[in-house]
Every structure is written in structure tokens, then in C-alpha cells.
Amino acid sequence: MTVVELRPHPAKFSDAILEVLQSTLDAESRRHQRHLRVLDPMAGTGKIHELAGATTLGVELEPEWAAYHSRTVVADATALPFSDHAFDAAITSPAYGNRMADAHEAKDVYKTGPRAGQLTDRITYRHKLGRKLSPNNGGGLQWGAKYQELHLRILAEMVRVTAPGGLVVVNVSNHIRNHREVDVAGWWREAMVRTGLLVPEQDVTVPTPRMRYGQNHGARVEHEWVFVMRRRDETVCRPQVR
Ligand SMILES: C[S@@+](CC[C@H](N)C(=O)[O-])C[C@H]1O[C@@H](n2cnc3c(N)ncnc32)[C@H](O)[C@@H]1O
Image 1 (cartoon, rainbow, N blue to C red):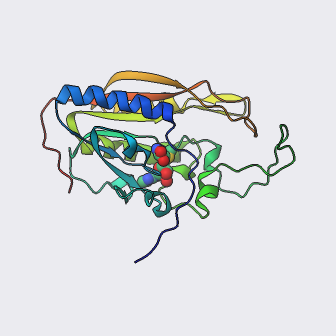
Image 2 (tube, rainbow, N blue to C red):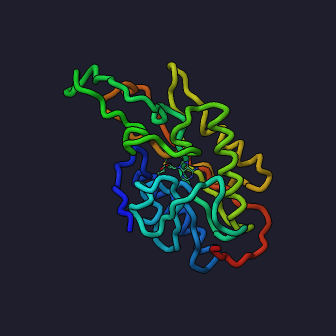
């Protein structure tokens, strides 16, 4: 038996986001009047499993993060190992294409605050994982064409495995690059609508927790987004995991 070492994760769902997801799920359970099957195709440490009132399944590319929870499997979200319409909801948070995607071993030091002069925590996917990310990991892509291409494939898979009438939910945020706000969230919302299969139900904003120190201290966006969209066609499909 191979034992996988757990590694810290740089970008888990915050409690505030989990609250939004829980109330979305509660409303959905009332609507369907039955237990729901929920997939997080980029589950990280598996915070999705903290949601109550649903059977949750996670998919995560990196074994060191998947191993946090027994209901998270190691797989690639660009090729989900599930049949069409297998879930009532696909809920996830992708990487944001920001500096967390940096792959180099930066030697930045805090310029201000009580830790001035000390090496920064280097809150990147690469650094927290402790090795190179696997191919197809969106956490290694800076905002741009490659980021978009990979995430369009993941989005298409999320739509494929969601039953008609079910929900596709994405939590995402903009970020500041070169003193300008990069509209990653706007791109996600448009990409979801452009699938032609998703109808926006709710755009929720949640205040972004602020970092107290570090390079981007004071250069944070005000809030992140949760986009809740319903898959077209009310046909009832029996959820089944392959
Ligand atoms: C923003 S984090 C999600 C964190 C998660 N919500 C939590 O609470 O721990 C995005 C995750 O997607 C994973 N990921 C990126 N590309 C992936 C892919 N192609 N297939 C599966 N997982 C992927 C990354 O490894 C990372 O853990």
C-alpha cells in the first residue's frame, strides 16, 4: 500500500464561501425533495465534503491533496470518469490565474509589518505541494490563453456530468496584476453562458479576506464571486456514478 503524504493547500474554500454553497444546496434540496449528488471536480483538500444534506464526491489531480478525504478520487477534471448527467450539481473553485500559479522558488521578503525582512510564505500551488504540479493542473497556469483553454475543457466536463435541470456552480475571483484588475470572473461567467447549456440564476459576491502582509498587501479585489447556473432542460435523469 502506498502512503501519500498530505501537503498544505494554498486556496481552500473559506467559511464564507461554504456558507453560500450550503444555502444554494439547501434551496436545491427543497426544490428536488430528495438527497442530491454533488461533484467537485477540483476538490483540493475536500472542503466540499463539509456541505450537509448531499452526497459529495471530489476529484483532485494531486494525490497529496486528494488524500485529505476518502470521498475524493485522484483524476483529471478534463476527462471526468463519470457518465453523462451523473450528478445533480457540479460545484467547484478553479485556480484564478494569479501569482499563486508562480512556479519559481521566489526569495521575496516582507517589506513592511512585523515580519519585515523575513522570507515570504510563498503562497503558491507549487510551493505548498512541494514539487512540480502535474500536467493539466490549472493551478500552474497564469491568466491567458492556456488558462482559458484548459478551463473550457473542465467546464465542458462539468456540464456533461450534470443532469439537465441541475446546477453548475463556480467560485472565482479577479486579481490585481500590474496595478490593474484582471477580469477572470467576468471571463468565467461569459464562458459558462456561452456553453449554451447554462442559464444564470444567481451571481453572489462575497468579501475577499485580506492578506495582512506580503507583496499584494493593499492590492486585493473587494470580493469574489459565486456563479450559480442551471443546466437547461428539465428532463429528470437518474444520477449514476460509473
Ligand atoms: C482553488 S483549488 C480548490 C480548493 C478546494 N476548493 C478546497 O477547499 O480545498 C483548485 C484545485 O484544483 C486542482 N486542479 C487543477 N487542475 C485540475 C485538473 N485538471 N483536474 C483535477 N484537479 C485539478 C488543483 O490541484 C487545486 O487543488
